[in-house]
Length: 397
Image (cartoon, rainbow, N blue to C red; front, side, top):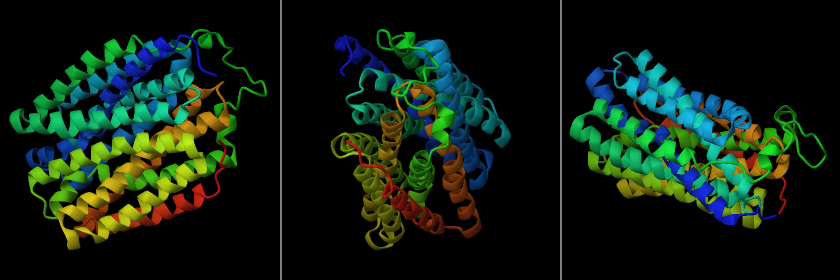
């Protein structure tokens, strides 16, 4: 059923997209890796560990963000998460040791992004129940667009001009200027926030504890983890991997931008495929795209050079981007609306595992072997389990 006051839901969608764009700062860490390593002398495993903590606390923030949203509403929760993001970026500009960067950028900023990030999708799903895949896809696309704007674009340019310290402070200021006004427009549909929070009628769906016990959630979680392990590994090492394959610094920066753009496109494409063809086909296609593209990333660059690198990265980015709205839409479709906020928040548990299995493991293998190829092949093998999991998901329209 289409909610009343459609003009209001368009404002909510736009505000959520802006907030998601700010949250794209999550993936801008790749632009900071080399400048910080060169200035501070950190090994790759240290800088990779920062990104791992970003993902872990992003996941914890999303897990708690749903409960906070239920208690305080979308506006206050989104504003609070954005304030933590800005605080983390500001304090990270003052640190010197790796553990301090982990605490500020990884823990504080990562948790703040996670809290703020659950709000746009959960709110949009309330306003657009007839277009769940597309609504989640738009929010996820905006997150990727923020990565392109703040990471490959603004952060890379500012680091070259003023250094990474000033860049972190500028990003903090921009986060506040965009996220706070956007938060004011985020609210539930009329009457939605007056629904009983513990409604357990037959048609209200499962609460989070019940959902976590179902084999259906386990299969969907395994699928998401298999896809995101490869995507997070590559997005956390886009720039250094491109340089390792012989790209120039300019080409490496462009590769990060192309990855971010394809990442955003995948969120829309696979979200629309979910609405059109159902979960099984969309999620199977996504996992197959990730697995094949990871294998191509190991094989094509030595043969085709930079063109082969970009070809494989685009496929990885499309699949990684698609996994995010697909998991959220899958939960909304299969587990009901009554506990949507907290159920959507549980999608972030994947980041906690995949954050270690992807970027950190990739960084450690690189330090030990001197190449990203074994890590890429490992991620490709994990992707096969995602294909198998998708084959056992329901195909409801």
